[in-house]
Length: 303
Image 1 (spheres, rainbow, N blue to C red):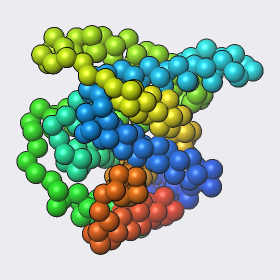
Image 2: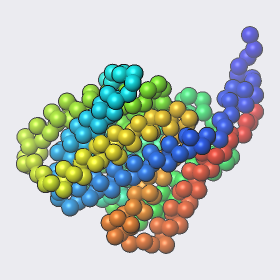
Image 3: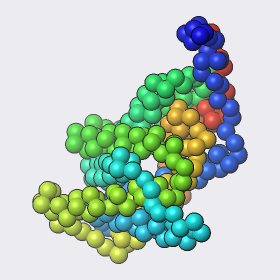
């Protein structure tokens, strides 16, 4: 039996190829959906349209209803799939995301969230034997550097509780993405995960006044923002992400998500009238350029 430890690196770790046009299109759509989630949540909570617990509950419940409805329209009549493990990671992400933004600025929250996602997914990539050639390493460095350039000026010392919640949310989303790479039926599995996540999120909603000492606060606009976030940006967005993950290695899947804060910042300029600065333009170009290098590049084998 040949000594695997002495085989060339190109044989030990097969070189990933450039992603297909289908995978690229699905990835772009998923990133836009993720950015939309950030914008919707930021608008709903910052403007006081709804409290964090109610937003999360409406988000997951509306997502579950839409996904189950779409599943019922299919000819195969397949039942919802998913798993308890993935549902748990989804709950961790959903609750941590909304609750953390009660005390964190948008820039601080995004930095903590995607930093935790990167740590989780890159750790798994390295443990699984993925290796990055010069182009891939350069892409990762550029993407993370561009994101830091965009977010660092607005970062202040974060609230400890909020910081922990957002780091947990990032770890939950990273784990959810990794587990979702093996999904054979994205729609059925996402529908099942949303259904499984709904009861614990609703339980958290009922317990929220007792835990926080604050009453629930919901307006019509808050309900609308949460439902759009759950049914479109989350439910359909996660199905798209599931499908994209089937054509992405863990390292690439981690890096491409660095584009979400940039897309969200651009959306803030267009939709929320936030100022467009030279720093935003330059950081966005560097980050998206780095993401492109990781997606399009091939690992160069090294002995």
